[in-house]
Length: 332
Image (tube, rainbow, N blue to C red; front, side, top):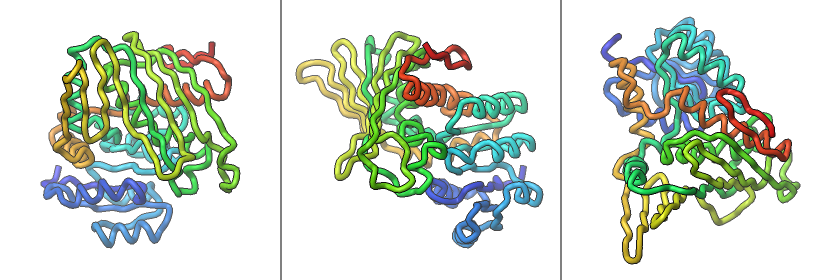
């Protein structure tokens, strides 16, 4: 590999800007290609960060020698970009959520494993040192349950409000809470039951997602969780996870963790790192060294989180408990 890691982007809007800002500051990275379905956006990013603009990622792969590619597309657009990179055995960083379905994610996972491709998924909460310290501290307790939430207003992106394109808020935003629950609890889900309500956003055009939802999860270590989503709010929000056990109440966000373990026993842990920068630095180092041990959310791990979200969607549709049995979702 050349001295600098040559990186291309598929999808250059929104969250891609965070990664581009980080990578542009890394002396061992060269941004060589910007691909987006919006030509003006690809050209604007290329002008700002370098590289050649494209509107077709197949053409980008044909013309560029890439050491790694970032796939920062909307949920419904995943699939073809990943398979094209995997076919060429190019390491991929995939932004969350990895899809709105499970079947496609499973096929991508299997292709990744078959081809030995380095992967990382943008579950940046895992890279917060406050979250990591909280995870370690939780091993001192018998954890019993958790409450999580991503509640706030509705993002303005047009595709976000369309269920077939975003999957709904529990897929698009609350995915971080489902994932950090798995990370903190060191567990996978075995059953999911979800309820949702609509009707409060009827004045919004092209809107068919849930306004609010509650998802109950049973994990394989016996811990239970309730995870809430809402996109109908204004001027108020809640983005956190709380973990409970005997003599334990932990309030955890991306930036800090507060543990209350008894009367007058309170400990606060503040994050000292930028988790977005951490996940990018670790991915680039893995591409350079082939050592993936520091990547906290490789693609197969993200699939485990995806199972919970898709099971929740299925439960909302059927009104029934959905069991997660290996790679199968089974309606009770």
